Image (cartoon, rainbow, N blue to C red):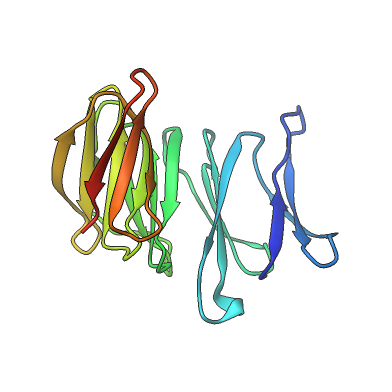
Amino acid sequence: MAGTVIQTPAASSDPNPIGTAYGVTPLAAGPTFPASTDTYAIYTRPTLAPTDVTYWVVSKSGTSILRVLNNTFQPVQTVNLGTSSTAAAMSPNGQRFLIITGNTLRIFDAATIQQLQIGNLDIGLAPTDVVISPDSKRAFIMDGLGQKVTAVDLATNTIIGTAGRSWASAAARSPLARTACSTSAHRPTTTRWSTR
């Protein structure tokens, strides 16, 4: 559904909260979908065919941390990850979905909704954010408590390196795809590194 605004539910005691999709023109309520009151992100898997679009709804905790919806917002699959999540990202090419649960990174094939790596990748003590390079080849995970940034090769689903970074807490990549940056909440600094 191109040009869609998605509203997630506010915190409430409703046992079956729902989200709502709105068409941008005109801004009218569209289909609803199951969600959680602690849903914090919704990612769209980009595809060439509008009927192949999927929406990845991510919540912090519960038995339905990850819900995948089809292009009409009908549930396709619910994934119980067993522990709370802190961050997620969809690769720009739409092939990989990454989610941080506890201190592990889980990598999914976005077309099949299957976890790719055998065993979970240990990415630090308390990872807080993940960014994916614009070419979809690498992911960078921030770990403030462990004071490091971990690089993961998304072709092999393996850790390819770490770099010390004092209190890395959030990340962003540059529009030109040459660098990524991490920021520190405890020390007012920004560090840049190459995404190549």
